[in-house]
Image (tube, rainbow, N blue to C red; front, side, top):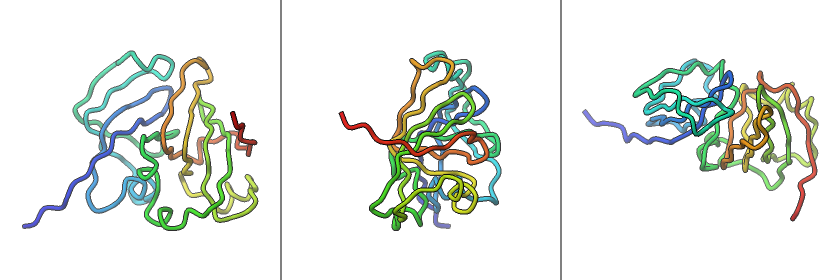
Length: 174
């Protein structure tokens, strides 16, 4: 029997005021494809560290393995952009992107939405175009209860159901 090549990524999973930092293993499909898959409700995370979002240096617990419900996730943050892109997104990113700001419980998130469109309509996007998760690139997530605490990553997968505000903003060049 031939074994499939296993890959893994390290990601931060945010839900209900907690961050779980852990490793997700996958083989034939990309990580983002697993997240977007509506036939998969749970994720198995290995080497998981639990911490409160307001104090990320405080480790509340360590679990060799844990299971997370995708429906409870607010967002997932990854270091590498490629880990946040589905297979179809990798080939059709487009030259346009929109700088977005959105809120989910406990966080304000800023990032770039890659697109093939030339104009952005938040209502149409959330109603007709977005799936269960939205992919943003070059992400900064700032904790609303402690603005000094922020998390950064190359990509984030944000649960559409957790978004309470979404707006396009002008990027600031320094």
